[in-house]
Image 1 (cartoon, helix red, strand yellow):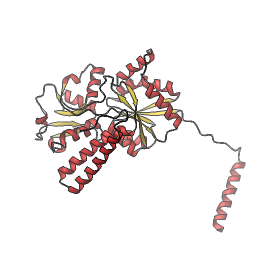
Image 2 (cartoon, one colour):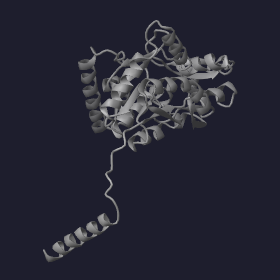
Image 3 (spheres, helix red, strand yellow):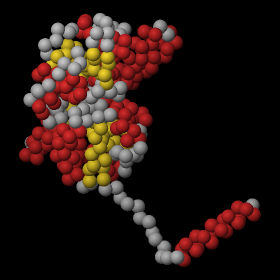
Image 4 (cartoon, helix red, strand yellow):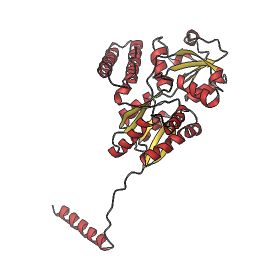
Length: 340
């Protein structure tokens, strides 16, 4: 008691002494004036910066806040950056967006839609245009091929081909091929086009972007030998703890961008076309149910392959729960078609 009183007394004296050294300053919280927007660089950061620059400028004008881009081709760095509050909002793939929601306090509030009217995109496996390789040849797994796969957090680069191609065939890339290299869609496209890889995963949007931006310089040198069922479009994720005022500014910007028949809206749609986007629709975390179901399907396949009854039962229970969630949410706007 005496020691606590003494410490308290000394603290009071110190505080009074400091107060006497100058005028008392009132600290006023500084209002947030900058939004940090993270962008998945499926192509080079330089290209993506040129594509996003006019959109970010429009975001600044709409919100009245500075907008600072955060580019990365590494999915994990986008997740970590949001968790560390280095970013406020971002354009994610479905798999990395799911991880941002799980681990980084993220929340889906919008999602992209395709300008063609097809709501979704596909994971694909590409080979050089002059290759005779087929899916059957790919799955021979004779360790003669060099194969490219996506980032571990990539929906179309890794999760979809594992869920729909390799696991149903009881195959693993690491035991099938001579080499397995993990890279971005852009890097894998270049590698296959230049015969550096025999085959690689990619997606329909990346191939279309190459055609739009580079006249198909690489896309015309490859062909698709496998494609997945349609996958849901990409989510836009913000931090749950963002100021509600900032959230509303962002919501208004995304959900009105490129909408209408004015000259301004027409120019905004042109900006989006460079990213193979038609605009944005409202969404929530149920948008990620499809990728959660894909993830669960993958786990069921792996458990079945391992011959572990307990693990299989647990994986099937998780899958059943996600399917029940999906059925309950099917009526919500923006939810992609069920995974079969």
